[in-house]
Length: 478
Ligand code: SF4
Image (spheres, rainbow, N blue to C red):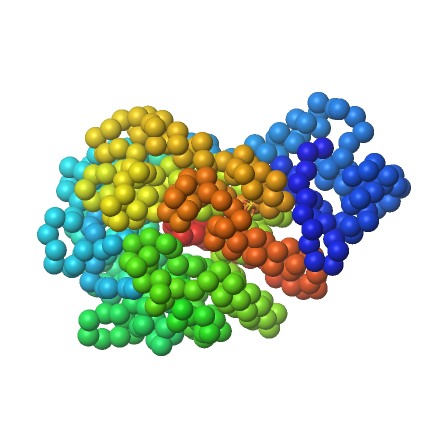
């Protein structure tokens, strides 16, 4: 049957099938298998057969099983984009060194969405064939345009009525939070996603605020949200900068102190201000991988001692590796999640294939603008830009990825490659995305295959929902 393979530590070979089944064989057994010499009574033979790596017939039934497995993995494609990001304003009252959105000053004029644009964008979202969508407010700082956010939620509820399930998420720094916002979030079931980069020493460096510590404001307001809305309605996101690299343990401890049950160790994106501040806050892929490995090991130790706490990126990849299901995380989708899983309506009425496409446009490059809110749904999603993204967005067909053993779990991310390598398809041997992915896959397969059963159980526990989950904002699962 079709398969890909790659050598891993311990003179072993990892095999993956197109649907994401995997097996690990000692090199000698792998050579026996490929040469048709594998003993038909050996455990390896039965294992490979059970996982559809081999067959003795050209049975159409077996091919149908494989096709059905692939269909299940790619289920996220059904219904078009499910995450609809709205930028009610580009204004912001913070000046984070890693801001990817190229924000405008809090008192700037001309950076807010009008009600006419918002209304058209809502109609487009509700035209989506998907029965359930997430409406996510990003910025800038959406609380600076709170009246508009309130109007949009109320209007969407009126228009969607029973025809569509809409989840609401606001991504906010929380430093402008007041009681009016809180009671609105509570009444309307809005989930809060905020930023927390760790303890004050890290957070305040990354996210400076004129006047008081932005860390103390974030902590105080996370607690207020938890009390008013419940712990499961507030989630925090961290961004790794150079200041974080030696502080993995402290960052995790801070999340646990604040009642969070997971953390997403997110690297910097090469967009917006983050692109300009790389020298002061950036790092190399090996530096990030060292940080990721050490922090992941620390998180596993915490779980060993009895506290449930998950790492988000590992959870996404493990779910892809050990279950038959896809995840729909935009950065790791094939076909790409850009335009297929997510769409963004900007404050000025432009419609982009993703948040990254918008970030690029704020840097002066509108290559991935799908159109405007005045276009028809089908024209946006079947237009030339989407055709380009589709052509470059299928990892299984890309040079480098097509033969890679990790491709069933990886993604294409053409916009990132366009940004970093000036080419939508990209060159994998020199791609920072590919280098990072390869190292993280190696680490996870090492943990899944070479650790104790206790560690494997911990990793698996991260993908089993143990309580009501938030709708998934863009950085998380989509
Ligand atoms: S990006 Fe790299 S790790 Fe991912 S499938 Fe392509 S070659 Fe493999």
